Length: 325
Image 1: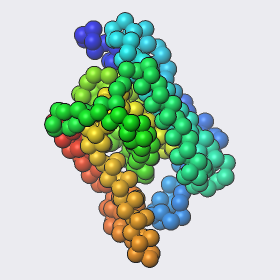
Image 2: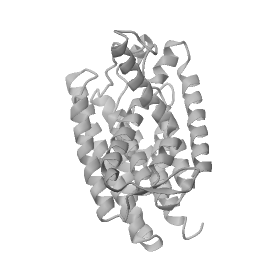
Image 3: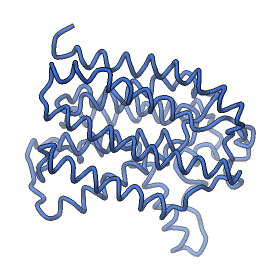
Image 4: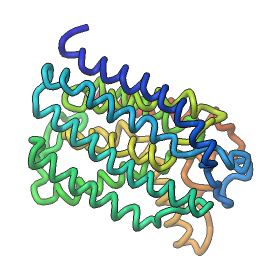
């Protein structure tokens, strides 16, 4: 164990072990309060069997990440630069803000007993506000410039005045892309673990973000693997999405992050294409159902097979991004 790796190892162990414990304590509370996930009627008919599965499981690993980071903060301050610690703090703060938005959305769904909490525009506006605050923090106090690195070429491009609007689009887009991917048992947790490993290997200021993602995802997988005992809800998916998006900006590598998270880009693109095709064609569908993982379900693929396929694809995207980074 080197001095450089010590804070990351302690942070991972803290998030992972505390996440396992807190989820175990949180699950009976969710069951007692009957915090069961409402299921969309337009979804695959076999998902009806999942109705009543507790949701908001993301609360446990979000809390584990915050507590572990606070406990490890003295170690980080002693071993890493103050700028790196600030950047990691800002990303975690952004993730907690987005997780809080997701928590409120989950709460509204449970209160209303239907799969509709906040409206899409309400969620997006709140995410936009959180993203704007995060952007102001990393630009003002995190030492992040308007230049971004390009994959494969190794070059940089200074975005100047275009940086802020493009950064906001990247942040909100990536957060929602991970939210859309959370539709099958173990799908988001499994692919997020791959993303966490990519960030750790990518190194630099983003390594701590990768540790947070990996620890959170692995602590949740035992409870969320098929058949899921609990869903992470928007609380968890928006929290993980913000970690991924925030990591992409503080590393000045949003393009590389988009490539590494290609499976999320594909999922989001499938929804956009489905909606656009539906409107332009007068009601026809490009896919049997969007996001893409539901299309494969409608084609008769099992959940386990789809999750395996998507995790392999996520790994391939991450390897490609690493080679090009």
